[in-house]
Image 1: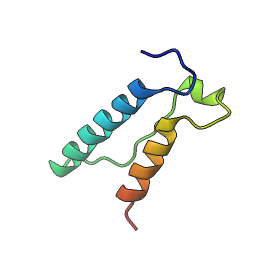
Image 2: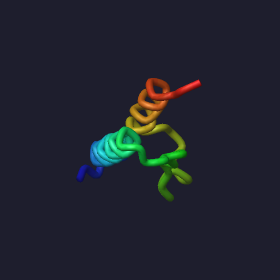
Image 3: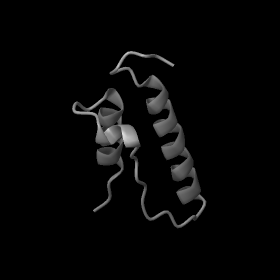
Image 4: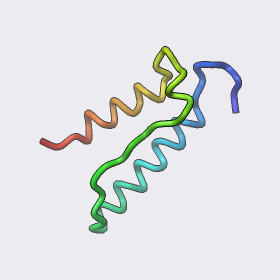
Length: 65
């Protein structure tokens, strides 16, 4: 794990792995109604980290009307 403040590679890996698992569950018929991606660290961070941009991109691509 990196100690650089804006390097959150591990969080990106965690996020993409869990969202992929949610997509697989939905494909199998699991009633997934939402997903909240938040951590305590988010409350104290002023600037969005790279994982925020990854999550936004995935959310836009996966949104349904």
